[in-house]
Image (cartoon, rainbow, N blue to C red):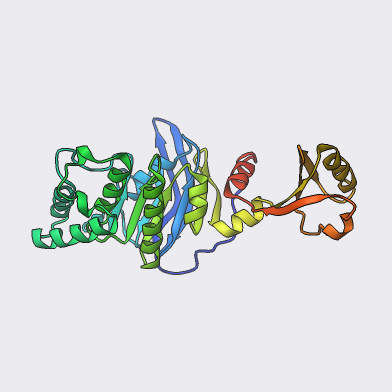
Amino acid sequence: MENEDNIFTDEKMIVQFNNVCKSYHGFKALKNLSFEVKKGQIFGFLGSNGSGKTSTIKLILGLMSPSSGEVKLRGEDPFSKGLKSKIGSLLEFNGLIANLTGMENLIFWGGLYSINKNEAISKSWTLLNLFKLSEWADVKVSKYSYGMEKRLGLARSLIADPELIVLDEPTLGVDPESRKLIRKIIKKLAKDGKTIFFSSHDLDEVQKICSHLAIIKNGEIIYKGSLEKFIGDYSRSELCINLNTIEEAEKFLSSLKKEFNAKRYGTLVVIENGDNFNVEDYSDYNISNIYKDKPTLEEGYFKINMEEV
C-alpha cells in the first residue's frame, strides 16, 4: 500500500528513482521502485533483510545498473564523470586502512579525490576536530575503538565535501557518546544543505534523526512521505494510568470499557487514543499518576508491514 501523497514538489531533487527494476538470474529484487529524495532531507530507508535495500544503495552509488527504469542523481546518470566526488558513503566496509593513522587515512582518501596534500591536511584537521578525534590523529586505526572507527569512517566520507551522503547503519554497535555525536553531525550536515540517505534497522534512531522516509518490502515501496505523517497515520498515542492496587486497576478497567479501548498491566491501565479521557469523571478511583506514551515509528513500521502490498 503506497502513500499517494507526493511531498517532493521542490525541483532540487538529489535522488530520483523512476520505475526501477533489478533482477538477478530471474529473481526480481526491485519492482518498479519510484521515490525521490530532496536536497537537505535526512531520508530514512527502511526494510527487512532481503527487502531490496542493498540493491537500492548500490544503484545510488553507481555500483550497478538497473534492469529497467531510471536512476538520476542531481539530474544525472549515476555513472556520469565527476559525479563520484559529489557522493560520500559509509557502508559496512568503512574504507579505513588499519595500519595507517587517522590523519593518514583522511589524507589518503583526499588524494583519491584529487585534493592536493596541503588542502587534504587542512580538511582532515577540520574533520578530526569535528568528530573529536584530533588527539588520535597520529594513532594507527588498529588502536581505535569500534565507535572511533565509525566516526573516522564518517569523516572519511566527508573529505570531498559531498552533496549526498549515503549511510548504512552508521550508529550500529557504537557507544552512546559516539552515537549522540554522529546524530548531531548528521543533523548539522542536513541543516547546511547536505542530503542524507540513511538506511538502518534501528527504528528509534531513525525516528530521532530522519525527516522523511521510504519503506521497502519484497522489492516494492509500501510507504514514502514525511516521518511525521507516517507516525500520525500508522501509530497511536496511549494514555497510561497508574492505580494503587491490582484490584482497583481491574475495577477501573471495567468502568472504562464502555467508552475506551483499554488494557491492564498489573496496576497500570493503558488507554488507546485516550484524548477524550477526563480524569474528573473517575474521581472515585485513587489514581497515582497519568502520563501519555508518544506514538512511535516502530509501532507504525510493524503495522504497515503486516498489511499486504
